[in-house]
Image (cartoon, rainbow, N blue to C red; front, side, top):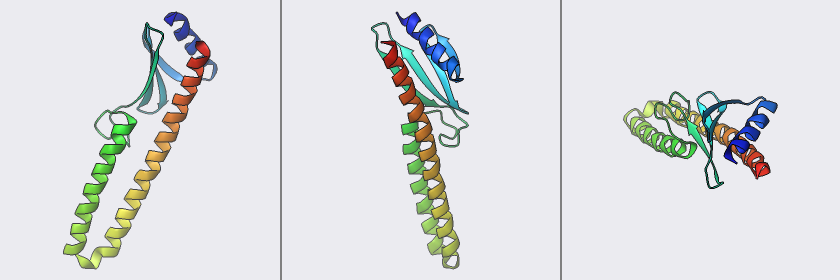
Length: 137
């Protein structure tokens, strides 16, 4: 039954021109964008596991391969640390408060934009794969 489900999903992926790799008999790795993949695993009991994976070298995950949630948590921690260091630097150099404030705002804004972009792309592809695998049952 899993082979049939895998083959049907491969037909759908080919039909809509998705880039994918067949990792094993029960697993397909779908490429969402550069260094961002979604693994679809068909278990023997009929359950299907769909999970995202960010490889290293991605703008959101950095050097550590992770999933989207972990990358967002680590990114927020890094952003808070950088903001704290910037605030300390503002008090040491009060003549540069405006410049440092603009840098903090821009970096926070750009991080938020990347998080939204990646979350939308990954979750919409996951939803599409979930719908396709629901059709297979």
